[in-house]
View 1 (cartoon, rainbow, N blue to C red):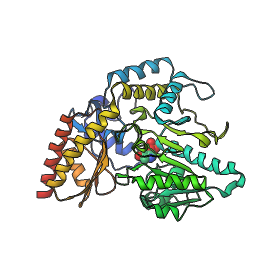
View 2 (tube, helix red, strand yellow):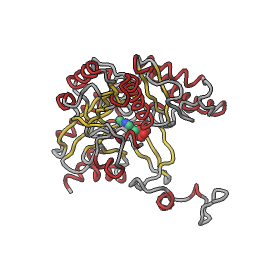
View 3 (cartoon, rainbow, N blue to C red):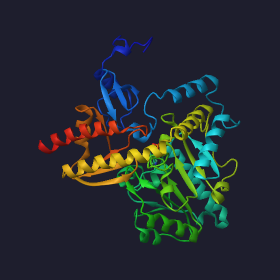
View 4 (cartoon, rainbow, N blue to C red):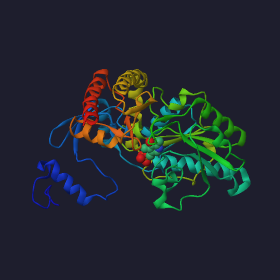
Length: 415
Ligand SMILES: *Cc1c(COP(=O)(O)O)cnc(C)c1O
């Protein structure tokens, strides 16, 4: 390809959506079954495809785009940083990531932060803290057992996959890292049965996301905290999806009377600029030492500026409180849908992280919503509709979503 021309000699900008899809299928490694839509731009809660059609977005790039699309204050800030300095490596300090780090620590009451390029890398770092913590106890590889949860999701790299309790994801890539065992989420006895002196950590999502929007019960999470204290193991909470204000608190664990030793964030942290982090406190914050972990890009000035601005905007626009308020309104609207359509079996979630469990596959509804009603939804597991809109959503957007979703439900239920 030269001068913006593809092999047919067309101007790429003028190629229609179908042609882009064909070209994408030829080019991109096929690990996704993508929807036949090419988005080109967005504004607020709305997305536009290359044919200029408008879509209402309740997907937010998988709970990433907290500020919606085209936020002026955010965009101008990262543009300015891009012009100053993008990258410098971790051999040096840089101001944006120090400022972003300070704000994250303040919001989480953690002691130290390490910036990563993705969620799965944040999990890798958290697991390395756990293993290092066990190693530091002087009993060498003995204190290396990690307890994870069934039905969980922590990412696709081999370490994160090793603690992801999903056979379908794990099976083709075995052998995975050793020393991991799985308990049942919200079943404290199942954790108790696995816990021992050789356990260095328990890892769990505060609210299981991909697994179907299951919040931890208070008894479960406080019980695990007590077990971790009793056996000198670290509690790692994965806040990659449920963190950053989505549940109506800055971090979902702040709904409970517990504090993790290590926590992970990503998704909404950069509002689309790829940045994640692991944070640690107390004994976990000093478990790793210089030379133990690193990243070429991690926390560069550009992503630091993105995270810094996101955290500033969260504070100045009171987005966490807003998410709580909009979450209650979304709850009411989804309850109405649940009452009206018996295919909805259950409704779960917190704040702007909610799910409707269906007695049928979610796939057909999502496809119809996208292609006919121009409503962008995502599933969580095979039969759960997930609602993770940008946090800047307003009541009118929720009303519009409910209107479009009802039309799809009518069609699916009445054939
Ligand atoms: C998305 C997600 C991850 C993985 O994040 P990536 O940025 O895709 O690597 C890990 N944990 C949870 C809970 C997630 O939702």
